[in-house]
Amino acid sequence: MNKDSLINKISSLYLHFPYCIHLCNYCDFYKNKLEDENQIKQFEELLTLQWHEHKRLLSNHKMSFGGLETLYFGGGTPSLWSLSGIDFIKKKLFKDISLANDYEFTLEVDPGTITEKELNKWLELGVNRFSVGVQAYNNKMLEVLDRRHRLNEIESCLKMLQSYDLNFSVDLLIGAPKSSDRNIVTELSSLDDLGASHFSVYILNARANYPLKKYLATDEKIQSEYLSVANFLKSKGYEHYEVSNFAKNQKYSKHNLRYWKYNSVSAVGPNATGLFAFKDRALRFQWKSLSAGYKTEEILGESLLIEKLYMNLRYHGGHKPSELFSDTSAFEQLFNKWKNAGYLSDKAHMGHIILSSEGYLMCDSLMDDIFKEVEF
Ligand SMILES: C[S@@+](CC[C@H](N)C(=O)[O-])C[C@H]1O[C@@H](n2cnc3c(N)ncnc32)[C@H](O)[C@@H]1O
Ligand code: SF4
Image: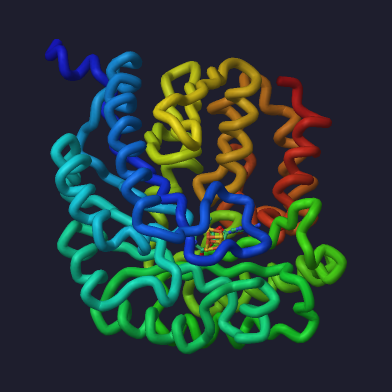
């Protein structure tokens, strides 16, 4: 056997860029306010150290880079890294990695943070998918959500992507405070007209000290908003293929599918988390924010089973009980219960549980049903 075939190939990489121009008051992701260019230099120095350490980490686990099938630059606001970033990536990172033939390379973009010249540089680098942090297509909601951009910036950003015929996704937040008169369907309709191939629609997760906590939407409002989103997007030809994700013409997020399928995805950047999935175990690692150190967590046995089951239920690949359990009888009872409640897709059958939009909305409580009924 060829020695190389004994080495596991990494084909997905996430890179975290931790700066934003403005820090939105609801955001819990690791980020810092960008105030001067020196911060970016320090970040690049840290990333260089992490990159070396990352290569050691891969080789310690008998892994190496294969051609990358998915590459994802997330943040923070990675579109702010255009000036020095593209040069840094070419010189430091792309000398160690190559892109596979049918790769997907996604860049997260905040409206108002990318010029046409910068867009062209990212395209030259190989970016072929954009994830735009729109959050609301309505100035009042943008203000409530403490966003820096307004409708005109969203529109010019999306029109620019559309004029280049690029593949782009739009992120939106629902369950926002003071949203009783928000018409999410009108917003979606305009964004669909602007050419989005994909939507990620998240329910706002407010931390304990969120300043607008008392104005948050009720559970009933969140549920009706979520189902309005799902029904409208399905009527426009988008498939509801994961709890928060919708794609037209099968333009799924190939990178995020890796997480939902519980495949290996490596990662670099402050606080970024990667996962190496082996046959009967997995290793999660998370980079520290200010050094090239990382912490690891080994996932085995019951914990591994629960994580896989949870991820499988969340997307259209679904859960096949016989793949994870020797006794599947409890799932047969749950199948009937969930079918009667309307939580299962038309494609689901006893041996393959796939949720409907109503089921995705109830995903956490369906996991509770599993904990009550299934013996792990
Ligand atoms: C970490 S952000 C980075 C992208 C970009 N900076 C932005 O804000 O649009 C990625 C996505 O996470 C979602 N997000 C951020 N904070 C959230 C929260 N508290 N609850 C739910 N989703 C959140 C937003 O939809 C956002 O587009
Ligand atoms: S721009 Fe995005 S990453 Fe930055 S603070 Fe706002 S939500 Fe968080």
